[in-house]
Amino acid sequence: MTVVTRFAPSPTGFLHIGGARTALFNWLFAKHHGGEFLLRIEDTDRKRSTREAIDAILDGLRWLELDWDRDVYFQSERAERHAAAAHDLHKKGAAYYCYCTPEELAEMRETAKNEGRSMRYDGRWRDRDPSDAPAGIAPVIRLKAPQDGETVIDDQVQGPVRVANKQLDDMILLRSDGTPTYMLSVVVDDHDMGVTHVIRGDDHLTNAARQTQLFRALGWPEPTFGHIPLIHGADGQKLSKRHGALGIDAYREMGYLPAALRNYLLRLGWSHGDDEIISTEQATEWFDLGGVGKSPSRMDFAKLEHVNGQYLRDTPAPMLVELISSRLMENSDFPLSVVARERLEAGVGSLTERAKNLNELAAMARFYVFAPEYPLENEKAAKLLGDDGCALLSSFATDLSTVEHWSADKLEETARNFTESRDLGLGKIAQPLRAALTGSNASPGIFEVLQVLGKEEALSRLAAVPGVNRTA
Image 1 (cartoon, rainbow, N blue to C red):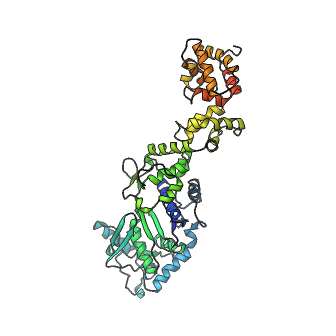
Image 2 (tube, rainbow, N blue to C red; image 1 turned 135 degrees about the horizontal axis):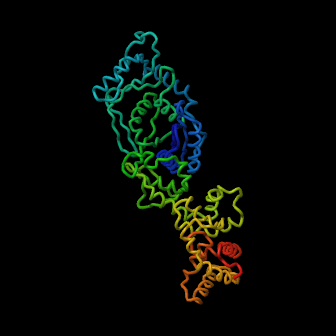
C-alpha cells in the first residue's frame, strides 16, 4: 500500500501556525513512508473563500518548503461527483429524502435547547413514505446512520475512540438546493484521492465517527485516522491573536527561517528522545504518529527564537547575505554592491552570535553596507566621539595608514602599540573606533570589523568623523 496523506485547508483566511504544523506532520508522514502528500483546497464555502486566501496558503506552504504531489485539488470543482455519491446512497437505501419544514426544524432546536443538549434530528422521515411530503418543500438527502451499537475509531494518536451511534443523528448529505455538505465532500474526496491516512487537529475527532459511518455506507475502506492535539498559548488557553496566532507570512516577515520554523513546529507536540535541533533528513527518517503526544502544546516564542538563532548560526554566509539583502536595501534605489556583498559574507558569521532573526541580523549588519551618518542617532556612540575620542582617532588614523598587512591580528597589534605608548588601556581607542566605523557602541570585535571593512573604507570612515583631524 502506498501511503497518501493530505492537507485540506479552507481558504477563508491565512495559513495559521496550527495549519502549518498539520501540513508538516502530513508531509513528514508521507515522506517517511515513501508515499504522497496531497493538497486539497476546501473552497465549498463560496461566500467566505477568497483567491487571496488560496494564494496565501500556497505561498506559505512553498515558503515552508512543504512541496505537494500532483496538482492542487479544489473541492468546489467536484460538486457533481459529491452529489452523485449521495444519490447512489439513496438508490441503495442507505440514505433518504427528508422533507422537514423550517418550522419543524426550529421546533427540534428549541426542544434540544430546553433539554440542555445539542440539536439532533429525530429521524421522522427515516422510514416515512415520500408521498406524505408537504407541498413546496425541497427535500434534503440524509444518511441512514446506524442507530444501535457504537462506531469505533482506532486513532493513531488518541487510541481507540468509541462513539455511541445513538449520539449521532442522520446527517445531511445533500442540501435542498442540491449542494453537498462538508461531510460528504470530504469523504468522497478522500476516497477518490486515495488518501490512506487522515492526520488533522483533534477538533475534527467528532467528525471522524460520522465520516467513518459514511465510508462504510458507501462500501469504501475508511482511512487510518490520527488526530493531533491543538496548539495553545503560553497561558494554556486556545491559541488566538492575542497569543500571536499569526499567519505564516507574518513569521516570514519577522525574520524566521523556514527550516527553523519547521523544526520548532515538529517539536511542538512530537518528540524523539531529547533531540531538539532536528534536520529535515532526520525528521523524515524518524517521524511517526507514535511520537505525537495527547496533550495540547504551548506556543513559546522564546523557544522559537532560540531554535531560529541556532539555524542562523548554521546557515552559510552567502545564503544569509541573500536572505538579508532585501531587508538592507528596501529603502535604497540601488542593489547591493559587489563590495558590500563581499563585506557581508566576511562579517555576517560573527553577527549571528547575537541575532535571533533575519530582521535583527540585517539591522546589525547595516554598518557593513552603509557608513555612519552624522550626527549619530546612537547617543552612547556619539559620546565616544567627544574631543578626547576624536583626538585619539586622528592620531590612530595615521598609524593605521601605515599598516601593510591588513589583518585582525596586525591591526590589534597596531592598536596595542598605540595605546601602550600613551599609557592607555586598549578600550580607549577601541571604543571611539567602534563608534566611528559602525555608528554604534556595540559590534563584533573591532579588529575583525576593521579587517572586513578594508583599509580604504576604514580610513575613509575615520576621515568623515566630524572633529577628526584628517591631516594628523
